[in-house]
Length: 557
Image (cartoon, rainbow, N blue to C red; front, side):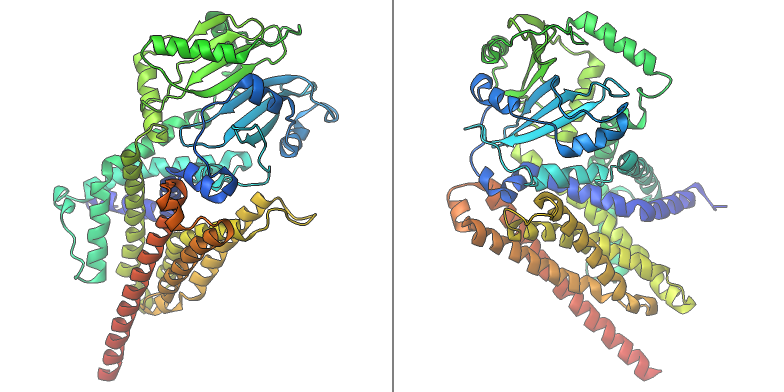
């Protein structure tokens, strides 16, 4: 079928890259934005624009907030088909409470789980979530969307397509095929190391685009391979599930054995018990960490079997000083404060797993490395985008002669994926600043409406890309590239202006106060606008040059 192994790899690289590049582009771009997801949250929620706070007092701040929480209507609705008989009206048994924060979070995320008495699976339950100001315990409005951590971050690994977990599977398959594409790309390029330094921007478009594609692929090869691989490792539990399979009984036995080994109760005792001072437990955990030379703040606080004699409190350290994602948990008996267990040193295999997971999720405190992550992700975007353009440039004249529409379709999809994705992102930022704090009765929640507008912006960009793609069918450039670049520039500037108008936090103020979360988002939008203008002007010059050549050819004909 193929003349050589190298030709087979070329075919594999081309067609798998084309078919899955649209998914991988979203993974890379939104993964890059997710590096600063908490900072985007602060831009999107002006009430959170204050300095990050440590975990507050449980006894004074967190406990009243937890006791006031209830399951979310969405969680109850999701559970409705998983119960025997009608859904209970009240959920009195609290399974767990939890509070989570990072060194970049001004706000504090709370979550609670509740037992559903007549659930078909006893392990299933309903959940409640709340975001509070840790300084006062006051709740922020429930319908405010954390655009960074609540939307863009999950978008990069799930496409927010949660039906039967299909989004996770699509991204997982794309990541697996990306590993194949990387290997096949190395095989294709016999002059591999030469690609580090070869870029000829003044050559023909097809040549310069291929140079840029090769250079970005080679320079960021370790980054791309590592993140595709570790992403698959992190979600291995989804791709190779243990529960709901023939291994489920073994999984249950393992959990029971682990409870016996660790001394942490697996089930409720069914006997009510009071809750001792959790603040005292936190102080004891911090004393023990300091004694080991690991003094630090609390990152995660969890209470299991709330109000039960088997209840226990787990205090996990915020490991921002290390790459490995470990918490050095210390577990206390909830009713007495007695130490039940201190997590032992990890095995070599477990240490490697936590290191790889931590390196992917980058919870550590290292700003330069974060920006290198962004650079690596954007290099991946450039590599994929130039692959699309090269595919079209190589084939569009031949397709035009044959009357085929393949290049036109691919080009329109490329516009949708590259500039359309930027338009969608600017759309949600603009919507965030324009939508009123409270919407009329009968409207969807504000956060949901922002997401709807994001997808509407992307669909509009796709419609425009296909509508303007007719010239590609005759071998000409698609004007949608240039027009959407101008749209991106205008929308990015509008988002910056709206942030100033609606909050008063203009760049002179945020830079002067060194409040970089908001200033950084505004500056990034301005850089995006500048690059979009440069790209639009270059595309206009190229379109004019191509038009002149075509007119000369027509005159000679």
